[in-house]
Image (cartoon, rainbow, N blue to C red; front, side):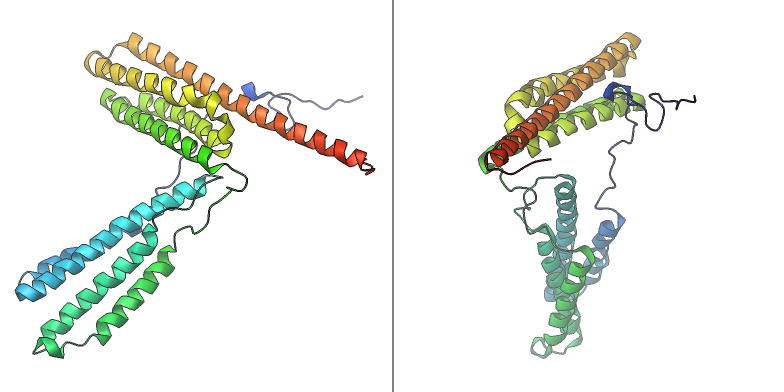
Length: 304
């Protein structure tokens, strides 16, 4: 009698979690939300500045203010798109406290209106003859088009039902400090001048961020994960700084092997902590289901 072949490499294989292939270098990579379309918005202010230099005191002042508003709008838009991308990447998140994209639209409208008024002022024989109708219309259209093109900021919290906001704030502060440690690791490892080591650090950071997201989704896990987010990451940052200084001068193969082994140990421990917290969450769900079943049975509801 024929028997279906099965193994860990089969489509319905029974491999365990430990049999999963290691993450690739670009696992979890995301496109930069503020790309070329935002950088282009820095360009209109440049010719406006040069064209305003020979327009007299009033014309030059209006032109420079308009250029400053347009540049500020581009900066605000870039930060707003990054904040929105971070909001979308998380399952639980609060809406941005500062509506950057909306302010960017308003600044774009004001900058466009001032630039249009500058042209009206230069074309008019006297300042009193400069019309305000065209600048206001240009500014309103620019504001609407900017909002339509880039959208508005997230206006509501996401996944915050039933979550203790006080605990969520504590988690946010701890995660922010942990992200600072990861950023310092990234800056330090660049001094080593080895792209393979940089990629290895990035893979460890992806594993660490998985732990961050798990704690953010359930702030009760903060107590068990605090040493990972503080002590262990501080140690990893300090080790990265020392390794980069040594390896940049000596290219010591043993130092590279020791540092790589340290990253392996840290990654395994962070991944194990994340799996344990997920299993604890699953156990809590099982308890809730069992309690609900018992209550239904006591009420005479039959469960098949």
